[in-house]
Image 1: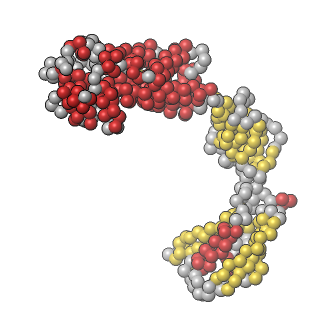
Image 2: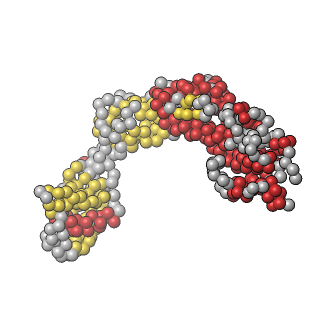
Image 3: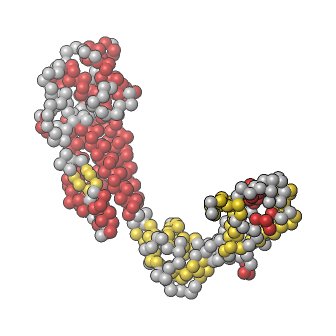
Length: 431
């Protein structure tokens, strides 16, 4: 079978200055030093690479556009001072402006034991130790065995393990410090739950039953009493909570982090951080799909796809520029992160995705339509001559099996298969 110029017409119908996104230069399809067989093999491989990679990359772009739309529709609650009042969760709509002033946050009760030389031996009492911990009115008996001659820190660790393993809402930990060059250790207990105990009582108490573990470690003494959070909502009456997570209604829950004399304003708005990330993701997938199409830029049908992508960006060039997204001379997009952040502060980002913004709606709709069409059937964007050319299916299988990375500097399994006389090898394999 002889390869003729007519078999190549579906690929290189435009001069090199009009192919590949306006790039100039000679391509394998127009290189006069290559034989028709070699030119055809290059174009089959490029087409196979495009068909293989275009669908997943177009799908990623379409998903990125859908995600941006979803982010814009999903309004979030925003704290005017998240270091004082943070948003814990929000699943409501139409949130009115809310002001929260924090008088004090809720804290847990903490008992702090005696600091003693960590490595000192023969002072901890040996034998079985039994003690009672009462937590919110419930009594829990705990015991452990201490060997004679163990160190102070070993004794504290043994007691801490017994308390922690009881799983009664009390954490136990041994801390160390250096005092005058000597290592010291201390056993500390803390209630898991914040807030004051009922009727002014402690959250928990600990007393010896037999043995002297509590007396020896000193953990029976309260270092810090538990206290409730105290706060005001919209200049209303003072409210209390044993937790720092407060339900303000309408699907809004906040976390109180520190006291402040200044009320914190809670408003409803777009998730600007997610939108910034979404725009970066969209730009990345746009460039990826455009690069994939340009890899098959000798195909006049793929050239149409390239022009459609470039035209979609150029048409909205001004609107994108206000966001910090630039349309480069080569048709790709780039993000200026500083300008993108500024677009959040001055409201440009929110207006860009507003329902009345015709430019943004046109850009997103057009881009999504292009990406969806490619994802559904990338073969629509390659010349029918390619699909009907003997060897295309072999090229497609070779590229897919080789997990092609679309790097023209590397030789794919299909390239290597052709050898010095590509078409003859291909026809022999298919016969």
